[in-house]
Length: 105
Image 1 (spheres, helix red, strand yellow):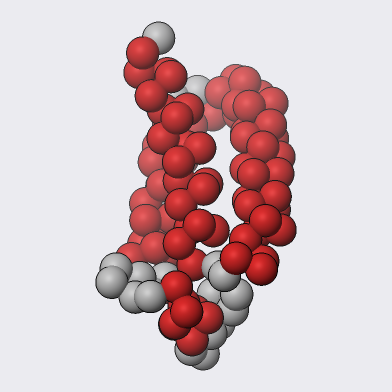
Image 2 (cartoon, helix red, strand yellow):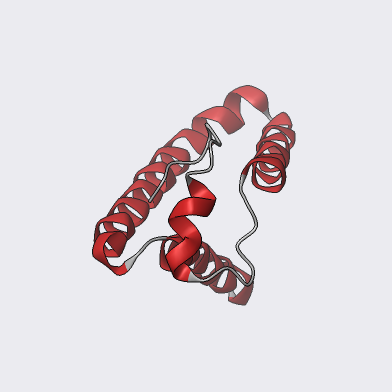
């Protein structure tokens, strides 16, 4: 039960981290609303599809989710710019620097 609770808290932390670090105060509220609502929507979809997928894919579903995690990790490593030590005023320049996968704030 403790692992489940820690996993839920970690997920909420990750949803709040990117909007709080990369967007200016003027747009932060809208970005938080979008991040939280899209997180809830996709959590709902995955929760309802999991049993159906488990019945059809059996244990291969865990390899499917592992592949999705690998793809997400590669996306973060190669397509999201580093923000460590970058002031909040320069984030719009960093994220709007011609990277087609990242929207400017």
